[in-house]
Amino acid sequence: MSSTPRVDPSNADQADAWDGREGAYWAEHADRFDRAVRPYLPHFLAAADVSAADRVLDVGCGTGETTRAAARRASGGRALGVDLSAAMLREAQRRAAAEGVDNAEFVQADAQVYAFPAASFDVAVSRTGTMFFADPVAAFRNIGAALRPGGRLVQLVWQEAAGNEWFLAFSGALAAGRRMTGPPPDAPGPFSLADPDRVRAVLGAAGFTDVRLEPHSEAMWFGEDAADAERFTLGLLGWMLDGLDAEDRRRAVDDLRATLAAHEGDEGVRYASATWIIRATRP
Image (cartoon, rainbow, N blue to C red):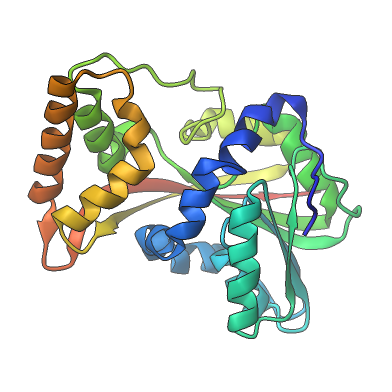
């Protein structure tokens, strides 16, 4: 794992976040984050269609659940996971070793500029890891250059916020009545690849063909009960309380507690979510 990755200056803020507090929190709570999106994993792996001899690149691999899953399928090949977060990659390496997945490796890298060996992968995958590039065309062009001709790109990304109840509920509660503005649709962020027309334009400009989007909706899990989910959510999104006075902070936490309680059931706290599985081909 590289200790001093080259990061494009335009991605410096993302590197600071993911290789800092945010990445450390994800690493510490890897099981929770994996469980939250695990209902999508069978659909995602089916779309990736990794075969025994494949060489797989996992972009924004985090703590490596998808890298390990791909490596198991590529029993005669290999899987490389890249991410900006050293903490998450350490956890990914630890889990791969503990599970005996010896054909998975991990590198700390900015996939927008990393010097991947040309045409060295059969398939590139990413589970919610490609929405944060400052220059997505450059990033996907670089990823495409790492794929052999005819190689495949398969991504899982969020659909628009309106289809993601978890996002609307948490951001609405923690706003405490404030008007919160997110990044522009074409700026790095969780919904930067939510618009199918933009996805086709970006991937087309990066040299990909046969771009297809398939919608999926699943319930996401956030905790065993409301109290458990509250601790987890505030640990992740507590920064949204910055600047609030004591009264508004109490109001925000009370609103969060109320929505979590309303979504608590026999299977824990769950919210509706919506994604795209995007397939594309390198000519």
